Image 1 (cartoon, rainbow, N blue to C red):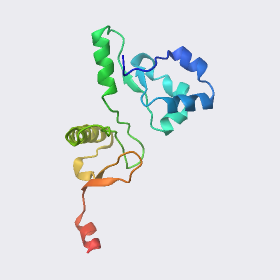
Image 2 (image 1 turned 45 degrees about the horizontal axis):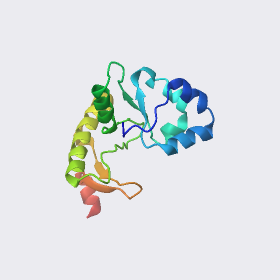
Image 3 (image 1 turned 90 degrees about the vertical axis):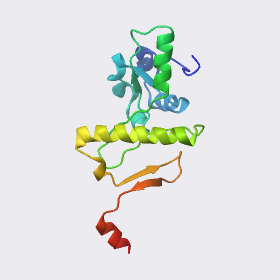
Image 4 (image 1 turned 120 degrees about the vertical axis):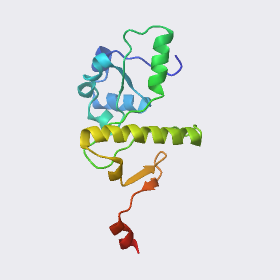
Length: 160
């Protein structure tokens, strides 16, 4: 499969990437990490805080029970998706596109991801869209570009 560069078993990952420098080099070498659901919950201890500090969370996927074209379709679907991890603070970020995508595709991804993220936040933190103050886009290390701002009457009066 062209989208899969390397497959590491859990035992090999645990055995060959014990040291901090080994984990850091693994982190820098690959853009995306997929993990079978059967070992996903064991990975934070094995990968260490470096992966999670850089927001390179392994994407959980179900690979058992699939073979051939079904497995390929499942892996391709996983590579094309994004994950949303809620933090403890008021700001959340979601990767919604790549620089080679058309603007229309990125816009569709933004709308779909906002819809799902707000649904998840509503379930866990009772956050509704009316409580969202700002939504921004950022590309790489660029500054954030706001595309939605909610200003209260007091905010507007303070600016005038």
